[in-house]
Amino acid sequence: MTSLDGDIRDGRHTQAVRVYYEDTDFSGVVYHASYLRFMERGRTNYLRLLGAGHRELFEQTEREAPGFAFVVRSMTIDFLKPARMDDVLAVVTMPEDVKGASITLHQRVMRGEDLLVEAHVRVAFVSGGRAKPIPKPLRLAMKADQDSAR
Image (cartoon, rainbow, N blue to C red; front, side, top):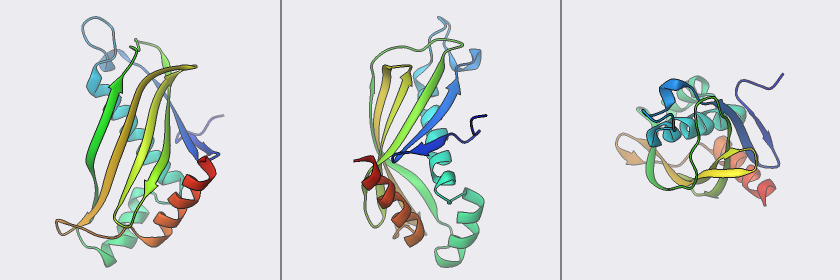
């Protein structure tokens, strides 16, 4: 059985997503904002599988950086092909650049071998409204993953 959270192989996290009626527009094509939700699930589960489940990360980090959050700083996204109701998609997430207070992730939404959507997402770690260094264990895990994806 495939993990509910997807899996990480060779530095790439892959998350399966089925397209439901609620994900589509009136024509049965996936609504553009649905891809943002699919990719958010991919990023969340990627962090979880790296050992940074949000609850544990929150409790550990709250002591060091009260009021912390990961926030999307910027995103470039290309919509290449449509997905439709009942399609099974793969959201592939891999670290592209890991810095002290931010990471850039490369995300692809695939249907089989077809690339449907591609995005580069820069996520910042903030606390008290200011950028702060990403906790060292998480930063090291992401850098190791980045190196194995090359």
